[in-house]
Length: 251
Image 1 (tube, rainbow, N blue to C red):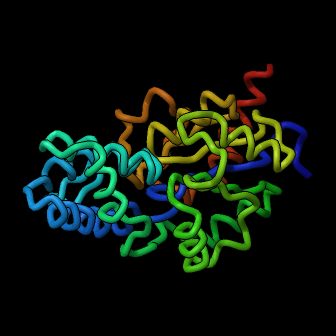
Image 2 (image 1 turned 135 degrees about the horizontal axis):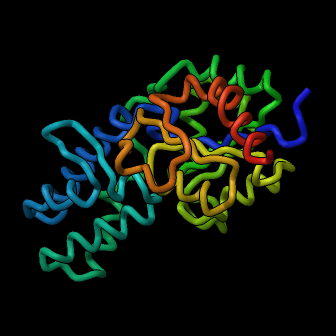
């Protein structure tokens, strides 16, 4: 039986944390640039890639709008980028609505065996939540493809009504409230500054950085309590370090 202050909830980011970010979003970035250049009839691709945080030559996504913002935020940033080429804001708003698509044609490839990971957490009496900047439709489709939708206790998406996106603590606080979990009984797991800052500002037990996405030890260090190569070893981290560190601090 779990102790009163054991970890009782894990809030996962999706892309880069559960799903391979590059396989999912590089095809989307290529499509977005192609559509933007066709709509503007100008070589805006390099600037749009930079705004998104995408290096098309290396096939790599780093920190930027794509990794850290909702669809609305990405569209706003791309619109601002297009305005630098002389387009009026009214025009760019129309362009991004059709040229910055909601769904990605990319592959929903898991970063580890999610079925095993989630079953281990359930055996520890830990609730599982998902907090993503992606849209609800795309998220639900991907979770069904991965076969883990039935193991999620709560899901918050970037286009849900009334949310305040990461790094605001709003989503983490609301998830804990709905699941009946104290803030210091929850852990945030993610691959970006926005993910980990949300956990830290919300007052969660810990923010765990996974290095399977766009972040590095250096870029994530300010808001990270623990590092993992990927989420597969999270259960042992909770048992062997997070629980123990909490009780050691209590004296």
